[in-house]
Amino acid sequence: MKDGEDDEPDLFGFRSATYPETPGYKEETTSRDAAEAIAPRAGTLRAMALEALAGGWELTPDEIAEKVGKSVLAIRPRCTELDEMGFIERTGRRRMNDSGLYAHVYRLRCR
Image 1: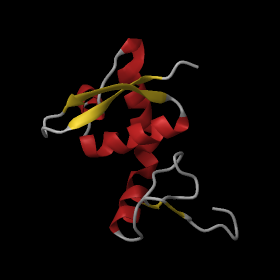
Image 2 (image 1 turned 180 degrees about the vertical axis):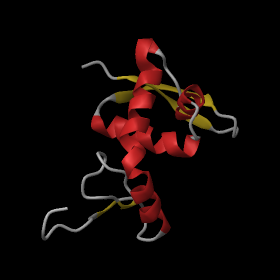
Image 3 (image 1 turned 120 degrees about the vertical axis):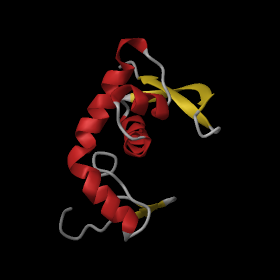
């Protein structure tokens, strides 16, 4: 963070000044702590998610997590970051997760 810059709250809560390149957070205690703890691995997890979508796969974050053998709690936010960064996009379809809720299906964004 540069001198004089603060973490500005967005519409949904707090995010780091460099989101989505670094994990964001919604409040200043446990959420921030979790973002800081995952930050060293976030790039690797994003790369794993991108690799899971390589070859034309269209997957939900939960399906990506299963494919790469990581927790959905680690992969879901990385998918949001990748979407914000322009690397992946929603297909317009949704599929049901194991939780019984529907999730967006993502694919690599053509550049």
